Image (cartoon, rainbow, N blue to C red; front, side, top):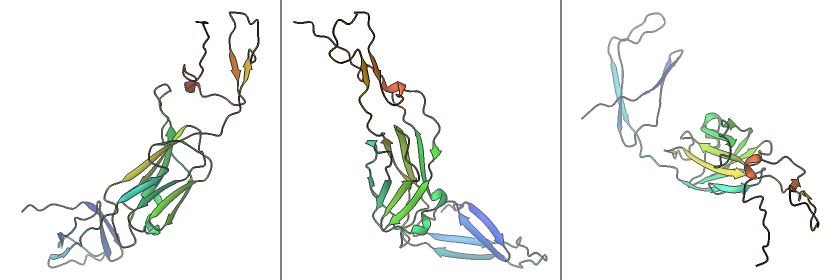
Length: 224
């Protein structure tokens, strides 16, 4: 039987030495520890014999990610949207902090626009209501942006349930409704020169990559 080392970080505070595993320990497994005679006190005190001890881990109860609101991949979400993730057990609010939960945004990369900008963290608040974690942005989100919520394996259930794999959800926002543009030539105008251009003037700047052949459609009736 092979001996598999467990990686982690060691920290010393006074007379207390703590080992924090990089990943969660395997469930229902005998974990062996050894402190060798190389350990020294601050006054050069030493251990005359190595110390070995062991313990057995409990059966792992996993958190299961059940649903998102809005649904993962939802389009045309309001810019004041919140994102919620629901699990199959009540969540410990004390674990929903810092790097354990992340919300980021990036430019929506359709087939016709430029490269997406780097993702940045969004300011806002995480709240826990039983089995549901909700993120509320501090300010309205930009129009046509990807909003990504990530929950890491640091999240725990109230009874110690573990999230074994990172989970994420994504929505795409859309802004408020625009007013109809002013058109030139005006509606139902007659005797317009055949070399005219057609102009639509909006009360807001227009996203260039949204101006394509199926969003500005010009036709005529050949009379047949």
